[in-house]
Image (cartoon, rainbow, N blue to C red; front, side, top):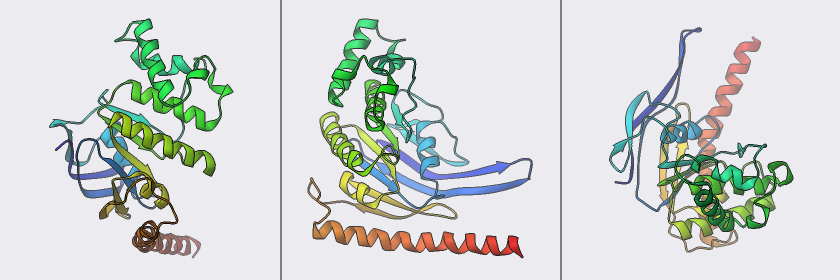
Length: 265
């Protein structure tokens, strides 16, 4: 299988306090090539940590993860990452940000041509000579997406990339991302808090529970695109996922209230 996670577990150790915190355990996910998969779950379930492990930025405590049969244990160009904050270089212009990771393997002319292709894809060709501070938040995120795509990764990893944007911009970029996915046929692993966003974008939604994190449901989305929020099937699916998450969210609130009571006693 294309991307395989086998019995993944992650525990953070605090040496000073001699304590440990289990983020998640027994995560098993198999993702075929070209699939758009969203990971959805409450805060603290380990969504972003799991994405960091796929990116090679974090190691597993147990289990293994492989891409096309090759074990992942460090970052690599076969995985492109887009974060919630664009993490762009303010001293470079838009094109310079996109060409930055290409400099070692392409000539300047080839890197510029390559960058221009992806800037056109995210509709930023006219802004290639602008600096980052001259762009809106949504435009900055499009630069980040273009930079990730320019590396031609096998998997595009996206950690709540539209979470900090206003609703109108978010919807525009969701539509643009779907266009890019259909054009490039990249495999996308997308972390989000938004049920609506996950349903709109995904072929499949993996719902995670928390304390410790685990998979509570793996839902295929067999609805024709574009998916309208008013569609009866979309509404029913949203309600189903909300019910799954409500149990987990209530569990977290109960534990936090209990901790607060103990500390105040």
